[in-house]
Image (cartoon, rainbow, N blue to C red):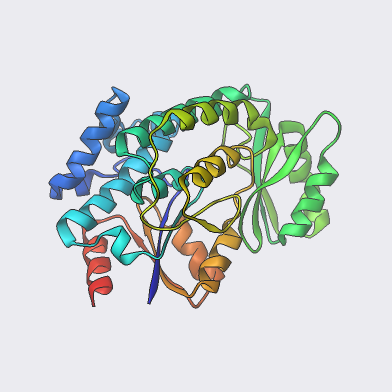
Length: 316
């Protein structure tokens, strides 16, 4: 039986995240302490107590989600004897989750991953002034049709691209605000069930993020990287890689490139994966996998009870 461990992206954060694990497992507390020290900030307090608007800030949400995911990984390893490299055929993550996956596979240390995500969050926030860009979710259209919609809404001054291909009928657009607003208005004419502007402050995964990509190229070049213990599936290739140089190049490219999650799930199925566990906050990715491919048994794993259940199922 082949298993994949997947890691959530931005939007899955919630106030209270990680508290139950920290209360029950010293290995989880150690993760949160190390991330606090890496960032010279009591991020764990923000994760557990809020305020929500501060936790939602890109520069906080990204390292917070990674810290929670890695706490789950460490509890699995240290308290239940489930080592990622022994039980996973692949790791993958959605957007910032790709960094969590890289950390889980030993490419970067926990401290370096926290610093990289703080840098990434800051750089993405600064790349485009607030109010210039935006994103919108298009529901009920195939990817090719959403690309047509994006082209219809773009002009010489306004960029619009398909940024996240999450699942069949769930694609996110990114670009200049006038183009995004036009897409919301035009989407029904293209056959979309709904098109909803997202409450984000920047046009992520679009060419407008080029300044952030330059920052990340520099930061990643300076980070110490190792070969992954498990093949890591890239957001922008939807294929697994095992060379650290390739993983780093893909992490730079995904700042401006599209997240190919639908194809990632297809790839897992093609490779014979029959089990997928989403480690960390929320149930977004496990939900998508369940809906997209009935042959993969997908579960979410963020509580002590869920960790225990996953460990038992993997060891049986």
